[in-house]
Length: 403
Image (cartoon, rainbow, N blue to C red; front, side, top):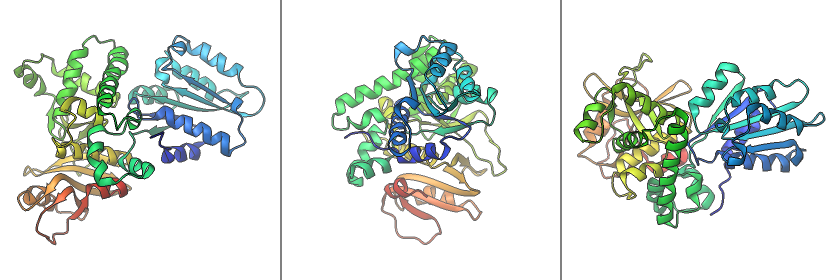
């Protein structure tokens, strides 16, 4: 199929080009961060008066680059820069270098040479925390999500209805795009990505040897997508299934590490006053649909509602919404509360909307007595037409157009 041109991200980078900020791209492994940098580099060379020599790039996934110290890296980069031109420095998966932030800040604050610095990493907390500590307010975080459904059908001119269930099953990691036609290879690739992420972004990063326990905990979270997970109750549930025994504190650490690596996205409960109302209970979603399938199975005809809900969550985050879940005092649950530009949207997601589930899907929305927009996102609508003020939106229309 070939690489999709990630136009939205290239435009974001162009907007910050030559401005005094370090550009930080974070995203789950294989989400396309390296490809975006490569496409951006090609754009700079083609459309600006920038020479190849002005671009200095390192891929720290390459073992040959991993043994360098931050000081050696800094000296090597500065030795390649001569004259008054701006040098564009691309540091891919920078977290592999110990004390990497000292090199980046040294380049940023260099008074003799003008550097425009771009870094990528697959651990969101690692990058944001370390840069925020030393360079508060002088870096721009750019979150890179897996290739969206809209990007896929637009770039490859695919028929949305025919392609939808494939996307629900295999997701949008860059490494999977060219393997959609070979499902056996694709499944093996996705399992490798999942294991690599645990090994490199969790196990190695935190010095833990409990690979199996972390794996099983994430599998538990994936199997409960859309359901409330209480850290206080997880130890008992896992022990009852005879999987393993972990303390509440350890489970909290493991779930946070999985979120930092973007294998999971945590969605907290919403309070109109702006506070999380259940500190120890949240919902968790997979960072990619293909990775979700590695644990719940590669059959998009099963768990379709959960897969759709996960898809909607990823797209809302991609659109830049703050996303919460909601449960009223009367127990009425709403899948998502999405907030952006001082506007709030209440959203229910269902594979099929019909008269039987109307009360649960639409009725829960109607129980909220405020003026914000209320939406049901569905795949199949077999309900009797009702004029109740709740917007019906087909899942494919939402993925293409937004709310």
